[in-house]
Image: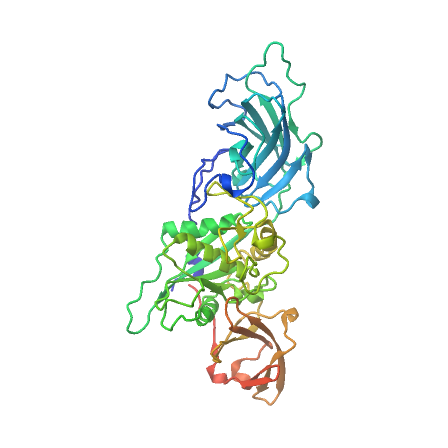
Length: 544
């Protein structure tokens, strides 16, 4: 096997939208349309032909007159200003900037961002093209600006992109400390007896409107593991082929639904699995051991992709090894999941985003029927609750979609989920570039998988257990070869979508299997011997 760092040198899939100043080619992608009029009760009240122009130059749109000296727009009022990097974040209302307490989600640096300016028009408004100019101001004194010409016939509607003034900003324009201003101008000269207002509609009407960009570095690293499922006496499909089309889809859907500036995907050499897949749990244990053998750094997620030869577990599209309570270097062994490679790439990547979500610490969201749901989720029926935007695919997503951690569909990310994983990604990203030995030194785990058929599998791996995760009912009693007896507290955790339990103990520094004479697992009133010779001792392979 080639070493892990060389695997990560593979080029990241190219994004699927152009990287142009203030421009965006509207297109459909996958199962989503750019505008879905039926996705909300709102009615489209504006139609538009929109044109972007750089730094005040004139573009073309149907019926547009030659450029005039700037004349303030009449009969229109700017209402809400929204920034959308995946979930819509109100940043201004009725002319004033909204502060942090009035915002619903983080805005991160170096990420494509849709800015939408909503408006209302006065009674008797005459449909016509108007020009909105956005000006971006930066902490170092730089300014960038661009125009949007829109033929307006009525009020803005959330489900109609071109019923708002909008700008799609490339990632290099999104910086901490930046602010914005929007003004609206006429493009047609008024009648001789009609005077324009003295000032254009403007946001903000006073003060400075900060975009509110966070300073954190947000990156996700995922290693995809193609799995060949082979059973004796059966003709089984090959390992999934993760070609450029598939990798782009994996990348884009994870990127668009997570508060990241970068997603790095790599593909490992395929592995072969020769046992049945009535449950994914034994395969997950194998992937967790493989992660330790590969010497993966703690921020890396492992995701197995498989076509089960025997049909796989009933009603289960994927599964995660565990749901970490906190993002720590010591629980990297839990950043492991697996999913089916369906005939449909859309279903394949939906499962991928869901299972990686478990590895980020997310529980299911209840839309009816899911087990192990998060009681803190704020929106009934698992709805996302806010509008969203696919920054790479130019798609609006209705608040009537459901969060990607539900069992329902169609799915998107909620603002609640965006905020929940933000801190996880921020912590894992802080370990970036620490090298292959970023796991806290001199700590080793004894990990047990307690399967529903009463069999157990045990192995050692680098890592640790947070004392806050210790169970009051579960521990190991260890008899050392020197006669000393130890009682070691355990993490006891059920795997998502399964009745397998993880039983994890941090071994004292310097205690190896060679110094252990006997081990007894204690779970409440139940006691079970663990033969020491059956424990697999996992050691990271040296990389070249």
